[in-house]
Image (cartoon, rainbow, N blue to C red; front, side):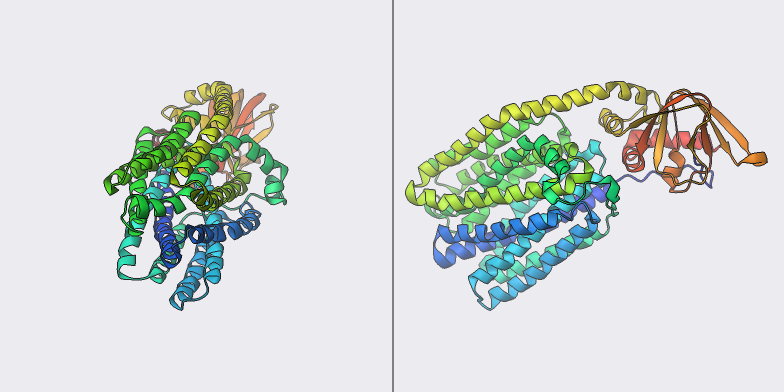
Length: 544
């Protein structure tokens, strides 16, 4: 066990500031992106009057971005994730500058779409890296709320971005939107740069090459397949919206292309309400019910457009749909972050973003065809049918996913019960205890074996499950015994909190059974208020 160099107890710094920076980064970047998305769609529709060109702008951006994302996924678990996210933001900012110049000079549309594709790919790498950073620096018990905050930030952007775009387009031109988007990427990079960087795992601790084809990555993807289906279905409906809402705004509601932005703003408002509800509720429960309810709320109200012909009615429909979109998305994202091992989370989240692009492109691509062949009523019915079929197919898999999660938690109950008996965890939330219990490595040592050695790097907390240990300092004639500790107990926390080498040696006084908790998991757990207060008091006692 280590001891501090001063007699004052350490101050445990929570990860909330990192959480806020990640959320702020997503909000700022998404605000510009949604304004920019509206600008692209409105510009294409105004210039050509064709939904096919709106779809072409979407597919032309996303399909090449798939290749960029696939290549980038090979590096998300090998490079420092924060640095990768910052670099991707700066690439996006540079591309937006080039796109601004291209649009201002009335350059060729294929060039503009190609630049947008590069930006889309880099943005997906940035998003996957940022989500992986969130999974690393935010304690697991806060991940559902963090996912809700991230979805809320996206919802704010969906609400405010189109409104900003509509105002800017009323007094300026699309190049202005592209320039504003570039500035938001710079702001996002500045926010992320202030995060603590989590270094990549050593090569022997993480899956090696192969990118998304590595066996560990494939196994992780199989484990979260129902979540990927939900996320892809939501993306497909969003791709439909890109094309469909422009038609609904101009033909059904008779409010012109500017109404496209207001309909998106209505969805953003509903999403914001959902994000507030998730944050208040806490989330983190079973995924089946919220995923299916979210899909239903996002898709079924589309049929209301067969009878609605006013902007007020359209905004109400979009608010309900926005609530459902954020509910399904936040549920899938938080479950992914909780379920996927950190060593492969970057690549799994990159694969998720690739599926989102595939779904969005498919929705945008088929919608003009359906509109031209079947008309609006049948197109709306077809989109709803796709979502209903996807929900029906995925329900059994989601239920199995939830059962497997519940069984995993039940298997951890004996560990949770023992952890609760330790003073440090006495007031911890149940979610924090499950997080800790799931991260423990068990071992046994014979009497006389060293457990922690004075001067060594402090990299873990040790929980004494059975047996007793002696804590001593010095060696030889200078050796001084400090105390004998009996199970259940824990040692090694002070070196972790202060970032100093072990300043005491812990030796097994009799055969011992031990649990080892990695430093990063321990430090994330102590950011919880109940743990921190108990830890501070215990450190004060041990140092006195």
